[in-house]
Amino acid sequence: MRLRNIPGSRELIADSQWCIQNPEQWRGHWHQLFENKNPIHIEIGMGKGRFLMTLAGLHPDLNYIGIEKYSSVLLRALQKIEEQPLPNLKFIRMDAETIPEIFAEEEISRIYLNFSDPWPKDRHAKRRLTSMEFLARYDKILTKDGQVEFKTDNVSLFDFSLEQAQAAGWNLWACTRDLHHDDKMMEGNIMTEYEQRFSALGNPIHKLILRREET
Image (cartoon, rainbow, N blue to C red):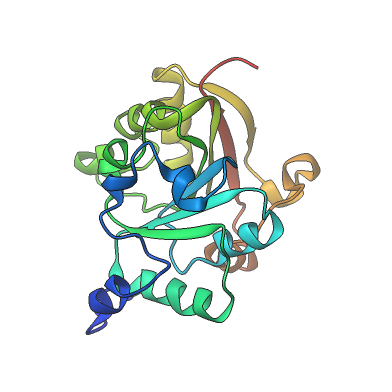
């Protein structure tokens, strides 16, 4: 279970150079923050940050922003980046429901969703990060050729995600129900902490890639 109540975590986050305070002020100007015009990729629900830190290290020609709403979890990522500084990576503590207020139209090239909270109760379906409500938010900030990449071991959530994407009119560019045995989709795959744990238990990892337009 995620740690959510470390005393003083919010104060430490507020003082960190890696975590953007008042991110709405950068809406439409994120490239100025990074001081380049490289594409921007974001991960929603980034946890302790291993996935994004690995990507940022491998791709210095891309900019990355990690979004996490739990202070105590984000603190772990900040501790890691203090040990391994990455100029092309920033963090934001926020709830993903407000992302259209943080990023402008066509400002983001890719969105990663890794092992998101399944919110299993039907009355909470709108909170799932692959719901039609969230897909509508992503549509507001993605470039025309932008895409959403989603990984999970939860079969019900994956089925729900496929149904929601179709209903919302998104294009399913790639899909697998056993990522680690799909050579094509495994190319360049970065293992998250949850992915490593669930895979070790023998759980198949599901992945889909959605795009706004036909390619």
